[in-house]
Image 1: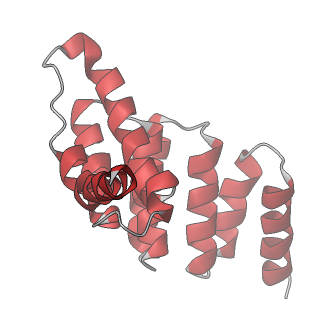
Image 2: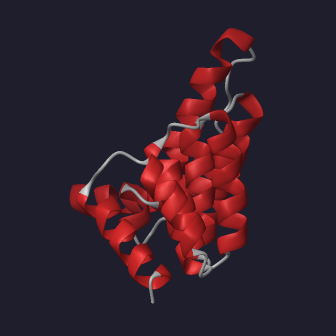
Length: 158
């Protein structure tokens, strides 16, 4: 009985987790707005790309993540929220929207490598290898970025 109750409790929790997340109420204090933005963006990341994204019982993962990312940005600018929106658009094949979301983030956080990679990959998917190379060259060297740079140069040099 205890095991069945635990299973039912776990299933109920995961079946309604999206609703719980969207009902989170935050204190209305402007000195906490940047923390609210960070919290909501991190929570959204778990639905879109993290632990909750891998649990089949969790409902409405992508729409919940999108709402949480957008809600995050109503409190304060947050690089993770812009990145998350860009990545969701990339996942949906909406590369122009991904560039728009990541671009807004890069205006505020110009040195953010993750936003730069998001911009670069989106540009690559649009066939804009010159723009992609521009963003990748601004990112700190990593094997992933170096590989993207190599691919862009190959495409540009024929």
